[in-house]
Amino acid sequence: MHQLTRDMTIEQIKEAGFDTYFVDHTAGIYPQAAAGVPFTAKFFQSKGDAITDLVEDMAAEQKARTTYDNILRLVDDPDVRDPIKFLREREVVHFQRFGEALRVVQDHLNPKNFYAFNPSFDKPRNR
Image 1: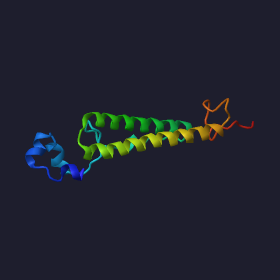
Image 2 (image 1 turned 90 degrees about the vertical axis):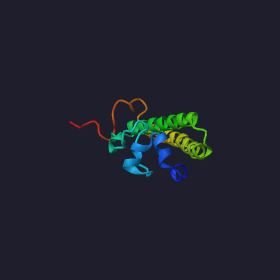
Image 3 (image 1 turned 120 degrees about the vertical axis):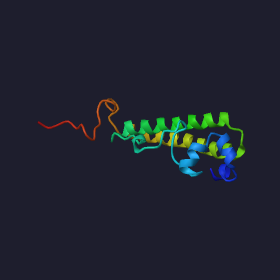
Image 4 (image 1 turned 180 degrees about the horizontal axis):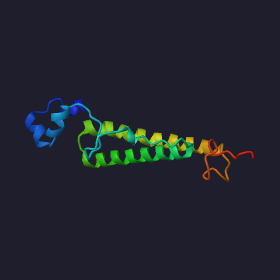
């Protein structure tokens, strides 16, 4: 961000439509979606079930990768593209590692029942 904003003039800020953001945050990083929705802890998804949480993690990595792909489609500046390419590669690796973790978890569960219940919570009761 510093490389992209350090030499901006007020006229460039206005022309880029960056003025409302600039009023609140100057050129500082304020976590928000491209549509302007601020980051919130609600974005963290956790159910306490290893399969559910790992699948959610994998989906998040794919969503981030798609966002980076879209940025790369729109931007020509190498100072933007190079870090975005790095971040995109990182998302691919994270997706692969979460997939490996999911496989390990599934290998340790009852293969006939690993989607039916969470064995750490739903243990059969002795009556």
